Image (cartoon, rainbow, N blue to C red; front, top):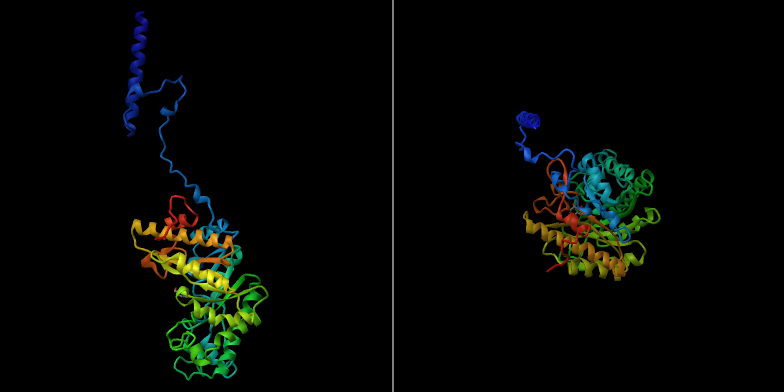
Length: 406
Ligand code: GLA
């Protein structure tokens, strides 16, 4: 009995000394009562809770897959974003259409120096260069994305020198006949290069961008004052542009007219484009959709797209972004607007009232948006990585985001 007591005392002593020795490691002191009995099975309460973040099941959704039965989902990308390996996975997971933000515009493709130097041969055959397309088109091709080409004719990002006798910025404007030849040559060279170098990659072209601006002096609402196309060729320049585009576009490639605030000028758009549609030279209307949280999806987007569909045009939303304030409530309102837009347009496509082919978001993350101070895109950017915003979850139809607009 006495020996047992001594043994028990010695055991307790060993245990206490052992525990004290462990205490030096910086861990919280453990009292003997907390030591689990070595023979008993650990119960759930014995296992310390590990704070693992709960994965959001929506994180495994791919935007492009979610809408694959209704329309493609695109993103506009500048070369700087395309080159960023960190962003690649997010891009190819979520988008199946791509627009080069600036690299396929006339200011990027026209080789004005070579056109000047090459005179008189280049007088009606401007020189065109294509290196700005390589990075983006290669990326799209390697990653199974289709490309919407933006844009052949535009009054902006097209130097005045394209329209002058000697290809200088201050030269004399050429005649209508010469400009029509330059127009045809430019469209032919671009479409030939693209279809030969990247067969099947480009599925649609914006042939003309932003040519309608009611109140600018033309009886049919065409843009006049800032457009050299209008001033040099005349009010029928769009008919020629679409006829040339049809002549050189590969079979099955769609031709689009693209504009902003379409709801405010839908009558002029339809009236100006209907003869071109009847001639078989246009397929669709691109609605840019630079919106904010007060824009009405029902009126500005859905009803307008329905009218274009009724008039016989395909539709695309080509430059979607939704500006907001840098506050939690602002981002929630933005998410609601994105959800309303995607769900309403999806429903209208399913019901057959909008013949829509693609919705393109105008940029990947707020850090590269042309409206950066309005945080209009689906991702934020911390300088190293993108983060999905509420707006991203809205597009994948997160049930916690209400799809209503006021
Ligand atoms: C217009 C053009 C786009 C782009 C934006 C501003 O909407 O169509 O190509 O230049 O302006 O980024």
